[in-house]
Image (cartoon, rainbow, N blue to C red; front, side):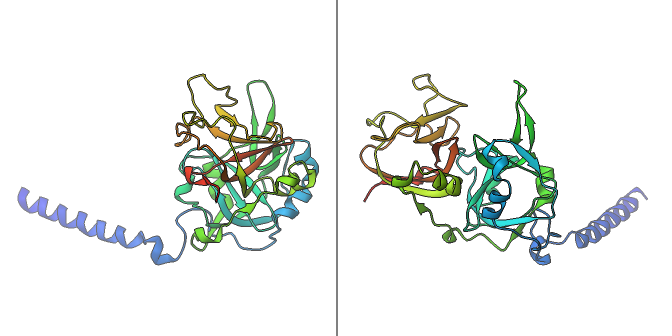
Length: 285
């Protein structure tokens, strides 16, 4: 009898598993992305340039303001955390400008690779800035009592974005950085956050042995990052910023003239280049 009972129980379990399997459809079969909020629609979409203009005063004052309007933006991912130099952020560009999205989550590159277009519902999120660099997220108060826009939870983020189509890395092309306009306030305001390439520059500390971001105390760090300068360019104008946690932090900096690509962020009036991968730096042709 026990033998028959076990056979019957196995049959029931098998039947239940079969029924449950039918209710869990493969995302590929439904046509819906397995991440984000698929109920969002492309309505009331404004450009990133319009968003910057709408919150220009907030950004200029490094403040923050909650979005109360039913507005959205959409853009293509130009930077993520794939090699650790960009942390808890994804950067999107829609052709008019770029913006940083702050998310308290690692491995963002896994579902938001470069070339992936996304739609973002801004209502309820905060638009603000840190050092006048525009960011979207939620409020954060640090140990000294200062409050600024920072990383939203991944659960909140999941409600506010939608994947559009599939990633096309070839659709992302950096803009050449114009060194002659480096100190142009309007150029800085319009282009901070964009993927750009500065050509034919030399790293001041590159000597064949120096690395991008040593953590041995040999280089002064700010927020666990090393700011490397370029020959003939003031450190108050342009720096290459590398985290000690980046996969390429210990790589030897190339000597001679190089082309450097990265997300060109700002800290007040200083341009900061954030390379995404070690392939973002190459010998100048």
